[in-house]
Length: 88
Image 1 (tube, helix red, strand yellow):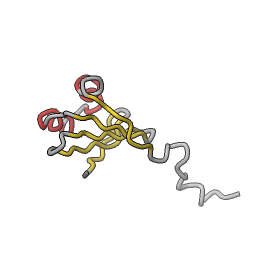
Image 2 (image 1 turned 60 degrees about the vertical axis):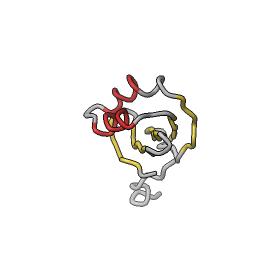
Image 3 (image 1 turned 90 degrees about the horizontal axis):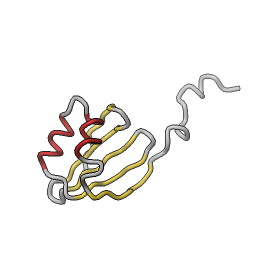
Image 4 (image 1 turned 120 degrees about the horizontal axis):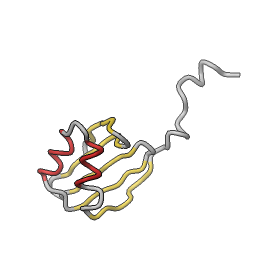
């Protein structure tokens, strides 16, 4: 599933599989959640919204069945790119 990168509230990426009506959401803490039964119009509005985080909270989060999929590396565990410059 192709993911669209976002920086809106806690959202970092969203993706949609129209055949399965499956919406995948990645959060800033690395958590990934899939929502099932999401229609094309909801996806279109979410992916083009100027305030995707608000749209997600108001129209998706509690409206569709969800399941936890995975957690990518959390921000706390990601290596800081400046660490190499400032080694002790």
